[in-house]
Amino acid sequence: MNIRTFRSVSFAALAVSASAAVYADNQGKNKPNILIILADDLGYSDLGCYGGEVQTPNLDKLAENGIRFTHFYNAGRSCPTRASLLTGLYPHQAGIGRMTFDDHLPGYRGTMTHNGVTIAEVLKEAGYQTGMIGKWHVAETPLRPDQRQWLAHQVRHEEFAPKENYPVNRGFQDFYGTIYGVVNYFDPFSLVNGDQPMDTVPADYYSTIALTDSAVAYINRYTKSDKPFFMYLSYHSPHWPLHALPEDIRKYEDTYKAGWDKIREARYERMKQLKIFGDSDNFLSPRQFQDSWEEDPTQEWDAHAMAVHAAMVDRMDREIGRVMETLRESGELNNTLILFLSDNGASNEDCQNYSEGENDRPAEMRNGEKIIYPRKKEVLPGTQNTYASIGARWANVANTPFRFWKAKTYEGGICTPLIAYWPEGIKQPKGSIVTEKGHVIDLMATCVELTGANYPTEYHGYQILPYAGKSLVPLFEKKYTRDDRDLCFEHFNEKALIDAEGWKIVKPAGSKQWELYDLNADRTELHDLSAKYPERVKEMERHYMIWEEQHMVVPRP
Image (cartoon, rainbow, N blue to C red):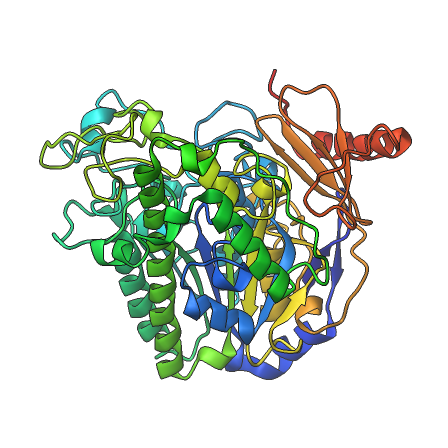
């Protein structure tokens, strides 16, 4: 039984760890279930266990009885991160270097190519039941001439993307969710069950609840079998549009009237109390905007928008609580590894300023009612007939203590919370904070090691690239080893590299110069040391260029 562990950017080695041998040889039918839960555009400090004021008791309990990572990284944006999570490859290797449109370049096909296999494909071969619920967003979604009518459910097409790229054809036995990236929470576009379009939804439909209903049903079915299961539960929440249930919004209707400065400072104080960054008491980056809350002419709208965001996170936490209870009732909770993370940092986008009726942004509801994009903040967000987002100022709060946001390679864009919970397998003291770095590319390696599965060199006639990640199992078992790799990032010419010693170079799109930060002493990237250490920058840039060449990265002009 071969377990593959990636050792460098150019080759893979075969190894079997002691823990993997135990799981593979001794556990038999008791191999661990694996549940990966992915939030969408969740800010670094949105959860209570990371300093937020949003009520997230279920995730907080997972953190209190599991472990939290403080240096866990993503690919900066939704579809690249999802491609990396599923395949263990960097996003360009997996075919999604940018978005889900085909640029006719190897790293930019807009869909997961057959260069890699998914975790589901690997674990299915190892005898696992496999199910996916929620947002897929890793299949090419070409535009149609009647896209506007299609988005409004006024015309029907059999495929939202080529069905060969649906989850059920990439290793998942079951799938309920959406193929596209952005949806109306009350009546989602591109909703499918298996590979069949769902033409209608109930009048009281709400995505976060409906996805959980399916997750609960899958778990109840899977746990009746002798086979373990792998489930990928990918919530839309809290990605825009700001859509939440009225009773959830009411919980937070007064919370954010204090304004972005006070909320951000309160989060920072809680992070210090929780020792998210150890004993450091000086890691809050300056707020990126000089706008005074007291002089904000749209206070009511802005406070309400953040209340809707909080309501969406709150509801997701409550639904995760239902999933936990289902596992508990089935007797499988202790033998289930649960990983919770976000695909990127909170978004600074003002989606109300986008053009409606394009790509994945509908102009009308199913009944023909026009959807309001409140460009002048003339209508409060939250209801089905509005499309809006929290914007950059609240994103800066959601990503406390970092700078920047989604699609940037500063920490506010690429560093995500990760909670790991597994009573039977995690040997760290409960509530531990793990400071070693990890990346979504590591989830494939982790699943392979824990299950004793074979990672193939060939699959269905395709040559398979070795995965790029490194197993997190030693961190679960408190067997620390030096992580001597570089982690690299590129998205629309936003570039970064973090080396084994914790130094980081960043080059924003359009810049000709690399910035240099020592993340050990400057976690929030406040002090650019590139002028002081030009030789270090030069050497790190050399490493980055090697990575870029080897991983199908084609910089944008």
